[in-house]
Image: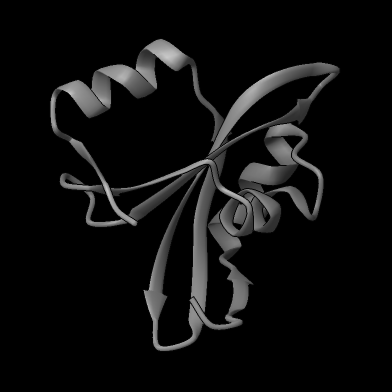
Length: 97
């Protein structure tokens, strides 16, 4: 993917404050994702990466939309490995390259 511009939605910014998510973490998860998926229920794309969060190593997911060379990150939160695996197994989340 060419260099894209990343925008944060107002919803994302609210969730970052509530969850204590550092400012750059959502963009880092998107750009350096270990896995990317398409959410067949919401229509959003999902990026997942392990990162430090509140003193622990956690899987962090971001939901995002793309349009041309702009990525709009919608939300961010930690996700358990079991929850991630369940969404893949149920085919709610489908791997994308």
